[in-house]
Length: 221
Ligand code: TMP
Image (cartoon, rainbow, N blue to C red):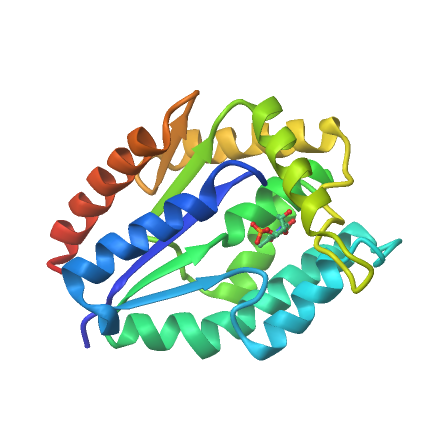
């Protein structure tokens, strides 16, 4: 059975991930056809995952212990692997996933200070050997990302709930998550392509396409 290609996007809130994912997906679909591409996100992406997402991101979910938060992220991931990611890869498709275990390492391992080892131990247990073939890590300067994320969430919040719980965190939390992302990129340069600095949408897109083209060729897709 051919194995498809597993691509993940990573970065802090407000890093431009959504725009870049949309553009990459359009590029892939044009090149390979709609059937060949699966787009998903974490937390979320399955019916169970959507419930976990609502619980863990709602700013009214006060008092979640860091371990609870991490366990919920992995519960979501286990379900997504079983229902969406593993079947798509087994069918030879390209999976583009908005966040994966690197987010847990950055936010819970770094931001919440649970440490990388705790997260990576749980990753081995829950996700088996599943690793992305390519991770596109968007790391524009911290300050700009935070301002964009806060503006967006102020616009989207309403009395029916919101996804603001993480955006209420202070800069220290995001600084630790940002530093952890860089550490991951330095540790795994073969897998993680860090796109850093103040770049235009077009410049980031070009780098994304170059990296993806190389991986597709190596995978014979
Ligand atoms: P999103 O808005 O990019 O979908 O991300 C949802 C939020 O969840 C974002 O603030 C990052 C956070 N998150 C974690 O803290 N740990 C994780 O493992 C994942 C997947 C997301």
